[in-house]
Length: 104
Image 1: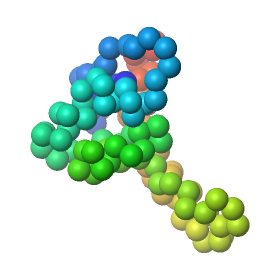
Image 2 (image 1 turned 90 degrees about the vertical axis):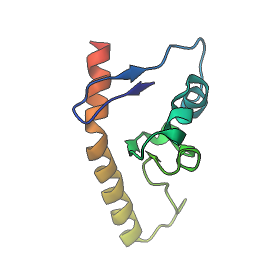
Image 3 (image 1 turned 90 degrees about the horizontal axis):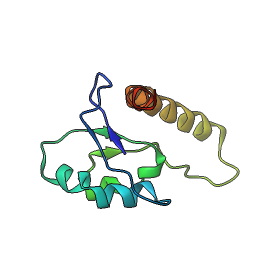
Image 4 (image 1 turned 120 degrees about the vertical axis):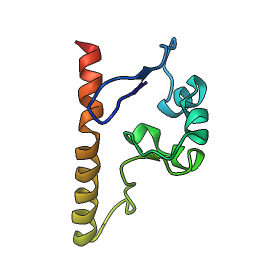
């Protein structure tokens, strides 16, 4: 797990864990959730793997919107949902760049 700042720099990364582990479980075990509960309010744009952590962090972890309709969604809803996901992705691009720097 990696935390980046607005410029894509990586001030914190978690230790690796053996085996597979859900993102939310890793976040709870490695400590940043506890820190976010006490720190000043900041917004953490996260990917869909972290859905559900917004309640534990006072809304600080922001994930892409859920898909409200499983099937037969109205056209207006599909368009709105896609716009919201693209807006979230645009806010997260610096996070992805920070992760790419770690990998290279």
